[in-house]
Amino acid sequence: MATPAPSSSSTEQLAAQITSAPASAYASGLSAEQQAQFEREGYLVLPDFFSAATAAQLKAHVDTLVSQVDLSNHPRTVFKTDSSGSQTQLSSAAGQQAEDKNRYFLDSADNISYFFEEQAWNADGTLAVPLSRALNKIGHALHTLDPPFGALTRRPEVSGVARSLGFQRPAVLQSMVILKQPRIGGQVVPHRDSTFLHTQPSTAAGLWFALEDCTKENGCLSFVPGSHKDGASDRRFVRKEPPARLPTVNNPLPAGASAADLSGPANVGVELTFEGEDRREYPSSDFLPTEVKAGTAILIHGDVVHASTHNHSERSRYIYTFHLIERKGADYPTSNWLQSKKHFPILGEEQ
Ligand code: FE2
Image 1: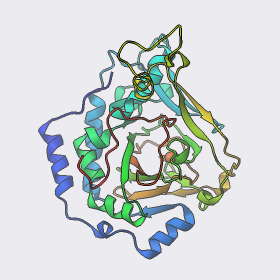
Image 2 (image 1 turned 60 degrees about the vertical axis):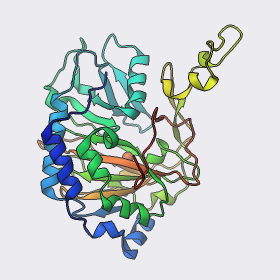
Image 3 (image 1 turned 180 degrees about the vertical axis):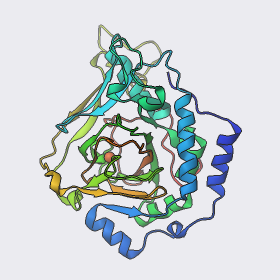
């Protein structure tokens, strides 16, 4: 169901170009002032993190990925967050089973998979808009499977920022492109990324890259400065393995199988749900819109509240983002929705 990564020479050339670009000052890490600002506000804008020319090339590369989507066996998976902020929802067009969409989503940890806007489908499962306008996001293993985005992820500037945050073994996971196409691109309701990627202790941080200018009109990010310190949330998006997968007298393990073979990354029959709660709801006046130019990165604390609006303009808003978690001294519970069948690569270590 996942479309393999393209391997054209132009794709490889773009990756090589990104890899060989001279390192900027960010490779030496954040300044003391920048670190203090991030600590205080929970996010940090990093202008000119990569060139506007690279941003434009990556945007064109995304359009190539979109043009290669194979709809013949796609489960028509929609990605949206609802207006109350209480749920992240996956749904499918008519005729698709709940298990199909959950498995497609869960398998995306190791794939390049495609998720559509809610308004993209007609009731009969045909596209209501051109494919070029239909996608909400692509994910969640671009950092390992897509050469250009992999090259951007492994830039020395990324490692420099990670070092500044105190990461010792930063693992990369949950990479995605969010397209937010003109008029159809959906809102992302207020949330904290640590709800979706929790470690004990909490270590998740996001890096978010503007491939186009991001404005209030096309749905730039908005943050509640300082909200990462409110201690108000233990809300978690978790996977529930199916009880039927546990060995019982009536449903024993197959010969030669262990219990571990039947849980986790098989991704069959898994339910996705929320646990805990976020006890703090911020008024819209607390959200600070953060307009940025193409080539800007934004560093996002896992606990800071942020959101983005529907794109009500005629301009798209392409971004690339991934998350870092600490693998040294921090536990990544098996209840996290995202479990790789392979591994989460560590920055600076053999991939
Ligand atoms: Fe987020």
